[in-house]
Length: 160
Image (tube, rainbow, N blue to C red; front, side):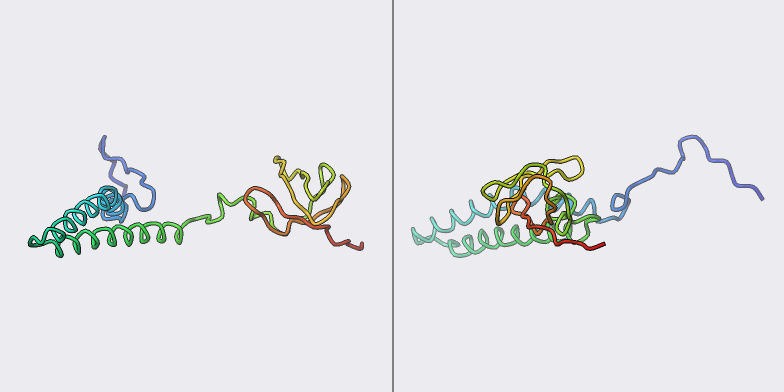
């Protein structure tokens, strides 16, 4: 039994996960597209509602409530989209490079003067801050980060 040859134009198309028919990708794009004008429409309706309430006209309270509801719905949609995307990320720390260096032991590139200096880790020079002055070539351990500045302390001595 042999496989049937495929006709020209009927090759399989490789689609990344979340981009096939019936996937949540299209729904996510539609929600994001609706989410752009939603707060502006809600603010406009709420403003008209406040104006109608101030003049004692009908439907003022309903328009105010609708405008506030649209803004609340937009905030909830934004939270849902962002929270779901971050929770399913393949590498959630991908862009938090400095925080991934915590615990790493390295050698000071330049002396630590007044608590500030530089260290080379892999192919990057990092600004560092420490509690006291250290000479160039001192072994230090990364204890955390503040933005793009690594926080360091003298590395514990290892006995061989």
